[in-house]
Length: 378
Image 1 (spheres, rainbow, N blue to C red):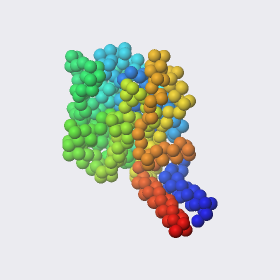
Image 2: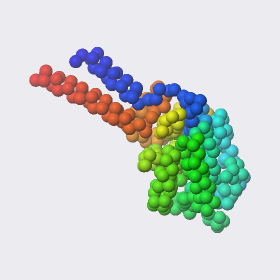
Image 3: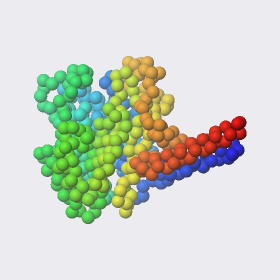
Image 4: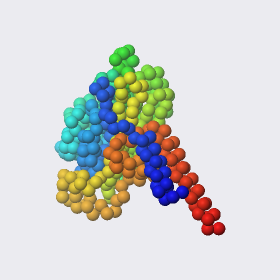
């Protein structure tokens, strides 16, 4: 096989992967509902904001969407647990960016946003109830608070967090008034013929936490599955894993997503967020992961928006950081997404099959060529 033929074959296989793995780029129609979801967007302990936030706002601004959902952990919170003015300053910094989005932004608290009476007071004053619901077209969105409030004023939140000890504000399932609200919202969705899809989002991943997962799968999930309308459940708190976690059970898609923890010694360079589209007449949502990458231009914008001393610290760490670790497959997806400026539907398992087959074909071609060359030399 000539070198030209080899190049043509590789180009054909690459086109096969790209065409099979990418959406057409067509935006949602007038009767479709689409939104963006980002979780665990907080910055590190000595940063003002997450370094990905400006890029997220810039990129999400170009996506067709009706609203934005934020799955908790927007601020660091623990160092300012009892200082309402300091908490407001943290929220102000985050909202300087989120406020640039041209659609409504809905958020639920994460463990960093909600633990002391002061954090509850500030959150509710700024954003309203910590659990709520709203409707867009044929989609009902329910925001839940899955974080435990600890009113004990003797807790040294900053000290516990700084020592990496176990924090007392463990996740908890909705109870009391919130549980009554949740049941009523779900009942209304079931009897309302105009509501075809229910989306639930929260801060902590209640279905994966050791303290709550048994009750979730034993009590809550069966009720959600029986409704026939709950299609998607989202949570943040993916910082420890630095990756999205995907699960589908009884027709319900569960996704845990976040940007990863930006630690004291560095900052995030790469991350992901979700773009979800409920197309009219479609039973399941289209779920796309958009990769965010801290380009030099956006990094400069980020640097110019933070205090000088923090900027110096970040600058000194820039050469040491390689960003989040992605699998080779996700690195390939990131490269192709950036090159083509399109969404990547990574929750379509057919993509992985096509990519695997294409790589297998390429491998077989090279094995064949190597064997033929060896036979010629002998």
